[in-house]
Image (cartoon, one colour):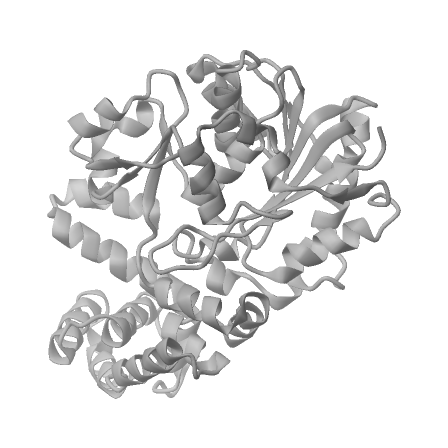
Length: 442
């Protein structure tokens, strides 16, 4: 969908305003897809007989009726015209269904009022954000009602856009020349841009910048090793966090002490290319993070960073497909083959490669306790975790390298104690989790 939107807007010479509206409708309808499809089905005698494009048009129309301020008559007229262009015989059905869905706007509005008041149930979160009921219940249990409410109210809005520098040539002047209105952070190397709709055409992503959430950037900085220490990253993906850490570490003279592991050959090739483009060195390997002993032997590192595969529920503003693609069993701690079992297995494997006095960092982009604190507690209660204890974020090497303003920024954002989980706030960063563990052995 993203690729189609990026290609269609320039080809059709769509205005910046209309392009932004198309993104809003497409992303929002994807987030609320299952909820909206169920409402559409309530008003169709034979839902299985709906032609797929007609069904999709009705879902998109239902989103605009329920979550945007476009007048009802305009929504109905425009989406009936869309259906008529694809399947003329279905235009009458589309007109009838969309008119029956008109009360959805009031339902959503009332649910949002209750959520804002703090006196709400999981069904209100379901309507407010269009997410599955089971997911609303899990978010309430994991985050508490107040933070779950903030998250749900925020999900229909675009995530803030932050750009990080991944090469030495990346400078804020490049962003200013592209009219992206950059605003810096107290942390060096990251800028928020207020004109994300101009980003694709600006070309800056080919000039040493990458899109990264502010919380993810902070976690990448947290994984910077001590000077002279070796760093291992498991689940490195395209290596954005590794590049951030390598650039920060390069300032201390140790860019070639990085080892990255990922299970995907495609992602590893991309990571190698990006390190090469950045003028940095790293050993980037294809391998199963559960079998690090086979890949690395008895090699140990001063900083071991596990960026664990997870549900991604902390990033649903950027990845709305998660809301309905995720199945409940995938985050069940007791289900074989589910994410928590995999995360624990990876954490145990990574722990065997931490040298005495080093750090073991466990990170996810999940908002669910099942993938965060419960995994860490399970690890510490296992034989593999018997020689580990919780460390403190303030002990991480990066705290000795940054200035007082940057330290204050990290602490304000939640870097205190043994784990980081950003405080949920309107328009704030994604919900990334980080736990610090340290070996008790020398």
